[in-house]
Length: 243
Image (cartoon, rainbow, N blue to C red; front, top):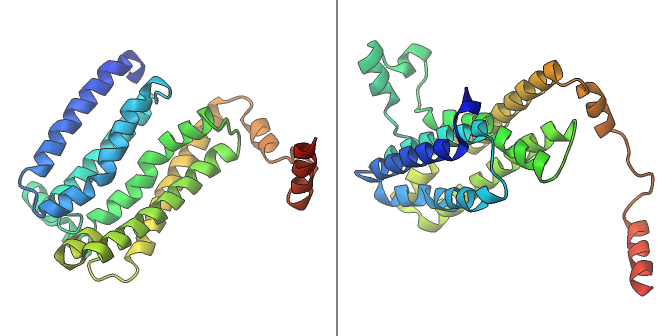
């Protein structure tokens, strides 16, 4: 079904919907300064997607996955991640708060978004590795997982730095630990789990439909060069530069 939608039309629709959501998110944001801080990376990432479209257009699936993640992020930016009122929503829709039904105590919207960061964005990251880095086999699944884990860690460091820099209520709102000293660790673990699930599902589809899946996977783990690197490589580079 996605293949029938012209890529530019899909991007125009998604872009228009996201622009409307950003405007809504910013109007009446509960913590305006936090809203601006939450959207710093969005203001860099979205234009980057637009600028690189000519050289690296993603699949329709990847654009949809990115769109869904960014929409959830804007919900968090509007209320702050620690105060998204999903309990009120489920109370109105189903007659009981979600936290009560699941036996939860804290607001877990931030946990959900960290999990979906890995689940939704690992596949677009995989596209970059396959199409730019030309990785194959095992590395086409491991490297997206690895990058998702590392960027999740970098974001936690970014949160920490921003909280230290701004301090006060803004720092607390942006950090959103809700009193959990292991908040950053759990967030990174959930992002890693989401990416792992995404790559396992992708591998399962490829194993089912790709004829040379097993051969490519095994070949990717074979040693390609018997020559060690390090001091030997440094000596070779010196010899080459002297000639």
